[in-house]
Image (tube, rainbow, N blue to C red):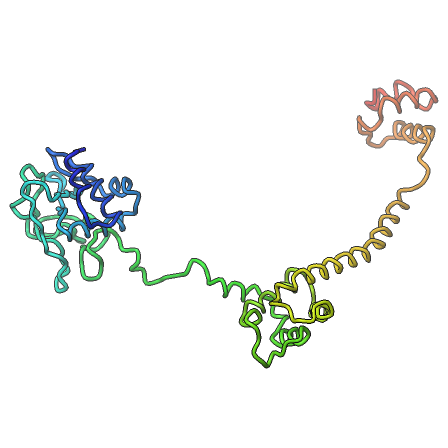
Length: 344
């Protein structure tokens, strides 16, 4: 961290807020002895933005002459190292204006010899760009990225994948109007809507008020059928009855919601009342089948005594201790019989 670098970043004017945040974090990562070379992942995490957005702001900073990006190679493995960011206040700063050229598609030129002293930059032998997709026979460089050599005319001056280049663009959500039209039942047509307007005292062939025009009132009327369960005759009946209480036509279908809800409630109550005798009859039938006098203790003792004396399977928990005592008191079974059957 360098206080002088961060103070220099704060003093820069005319930048967008996010661009200035990127510049500030670059200066925060600046080391007076070794320079500034944070990874893109670290810089994007510090700025709380995506890597593609980060590269856009870095391009803006480079265009206004506040930074310069220099790509580096590891001298041992020949792999790409984090980009070196040379800030404008560093000694030996020179602005490179070699922006993408349409004919070749190559971006910034090779690192010049006027770099800041102590910069660990390895020149690229052979004059080839750092990002080669295929191994180069001259320099034996291998690909360091899965993306094409950027910057190029097809992509922005960024080495990050351009996700907007995907030719297939599928919408995440359909428009609200299309969803409502898809959910709307097809039973209520335009003829029914005209009949509803006539029942309300409106002429469908003349100019209608604004709250009865377009698809919103039609969708509202369809909800009376889909959500409240009212059919066409019931809706027209409620609409005609509303004119008796209010001579003037209602201000849109929303004014009839309360009447339609009451009609749906009356319909539900009538249906429940008609189903009540049927449920009562079913309950009576079930009660009749199970009704009758309960068996006495003597009958139960005789029944279980026959099960004990028989040869069939007798579950151990079938006969309780009270029933065993009742059978013994009446002399229906003996202790040995109960013991042999596993009751005692």
